[in-house]
Image (cartoon, rainbow, N blue to C red; front, top):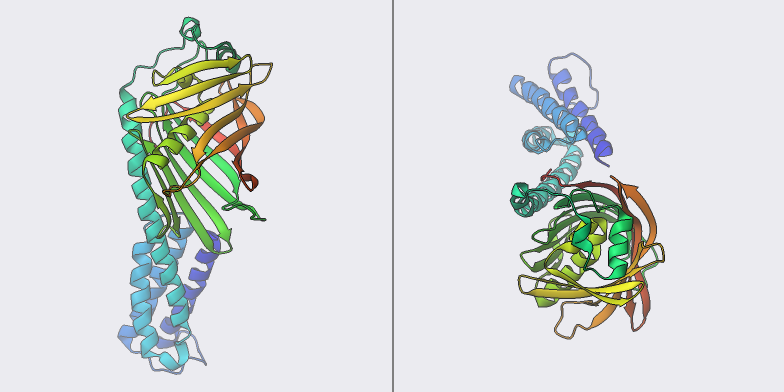
Length: 365
């Protein structure tokens, strides 16, 4: 879409060059009858250059295209007004470009806010001395948890304190929805002080983009979903969100298994293939059950979570199922998973997700 819009803007730029060519009699433009003054000729050229430069900058993914395109639109509007009968339809293109520019500004502001939040959770972790996970540190864990950590390969490796990962996903926003929406997400975690920031972009319909940010920091959770990064669709906080978000964090430690030893997490054996974990951090508490197969691989996580943030909200079972494992940087982790709500009306599998990249002990990017 970015390249298509860049091409459209370059075509719009080229049309402005006609005013310059007409004014200096470089070319005959039969459909442009208006007399063009010397000053207008120069501004037709300036407008062309500004639009062309903006198109190139946008194609390269540079945010500064916005500064140049706003100037180009202002100049273009004055030029079109002075030759209205021949160029009035160019105002429609200017309007479209301005709408895209405004939406881009909201997107940049939203991303900037998220970048600050990422830095706030990652920065304190830079001073942590990274040591290796020793075998005697897992001695007191329930047998299935100990087997999982051994099988995952984290024993003898550096403990994981920060994580960055990328996801591709298919999402259904409500029960009964037939079609999946495609999404891409990035997520940052810290483990010593449990926290994460999850940033997602999802195309609901052609030309309709949803951006979202989930955050857990200092024991508090937040959920935001915005239309075009501008209009709030969801903006939730509160005790129920705090509990649900810490339960999510707990379930996602399977991507960085050494976090299972965090002193804020306690483990309780259930049987040979499952154990209950409880995390209590900064006044927020949540629990979930981890299930493992006979080989010691993690295969399922179940938690009773609040589905909504209303006063009448009830807890329902929230289930993560593993579809595929892979060894990444020497650590075996689940890379394909689904998430399902067990509701009164039936199961709602709302997420199919794949980890496409992951890095450990990173700084904010």
